Image (cartoon, rainbow, N blue to C red; front, side, top):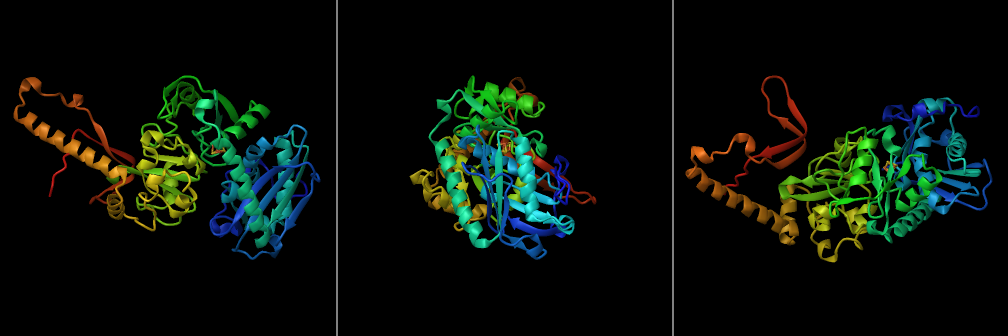
Length: 469
Ligand code: SF4
């Protein structure tokens, strides 16, 4: 079946990583542009593969090129609503090709071709040919398929503009619905090949964290293939409307994550946040010093206020982990009226990259727009604190209230200590412990030739004493 393709094609190559040293060229990715798009069409020339722009044998080793992948499909049972879900499989199917690496989705794709694949004679038409076969195998309802691979800058630019418009149409349709309007949510386990304890819960108000699959897409996919990776979750009993905790969601999470995760809050980064796979578009992260939440997306190249870039932060919370204080999310979820509602929504957001902020101006509450700093306003905790104070961000009132409460508590406890008797002494194990800080990585100073590093450290204390210097 793949005899014309000079490299192996098999699911066994799915986890293959092509490092810079072994890379012939990079296609799309953070230093270029690119997109992938599946379109259901009336007129499709089955099996046709076109390469528009330089092919691999015309590219220079080590260079980066723009890259577009247009997949046109036709089939009696194919619906427009299936485009998003079929498109999301491009990631997995491209990775079946030995020597071709595909990351992310939509206009975030990032691909590499290995030197070995190039030396074996692999060209871009082989990519198209392999995908045509694999898509038809995976989705028997695809009767005809044709593929265009674009590498010419101008063509990729106009393709990207069209693709962006298509993504927006899909997303805006999902915005018309809310969680209260439906009886069914959906689960997706497509990313379990690399994040075995990850299950996405997709609701009308919470688009999947890859940003490529919304509630309508899931509905169409589950209808087409009820035993596939996308499945129904009866909404059932709601335990906490604000946090977004549901009995059935918890049960499905426990079942699909082999018991690793049995509780999930859909709308909070605290307590039991949603698990994160690795293809999330952005990460929400807690900034304990200011009791607020920052957001960083994968396009942001600088350091976050935590002193690490997106890639390092993603490493801390991806792979299907549930890490309190962190949550992978889609940019579309930031347009949801339920966006981190249990944490205060935008009133709790204290930092985000300017590019995201600009793209969300219609969705951030008007009174909050000027109060949230970006990298152009503040970067360190000190600078952010100053900005928040000057712009009267609601988090400052929250900080002040919690400091006053802590001071009051200390005063009360000092008085109590003075009158403490053996009779009212509280046993140590009865003292309630409160989490006061969280750090994804914490190193302790050492002097014995060893270094102690705590991963995902949570610091608990019986009492926090704040003293004026
Ligand atoms: Fe499915 Fe979630 Fe992975 Fe998207 S991020 S493909 S919805 S598991």
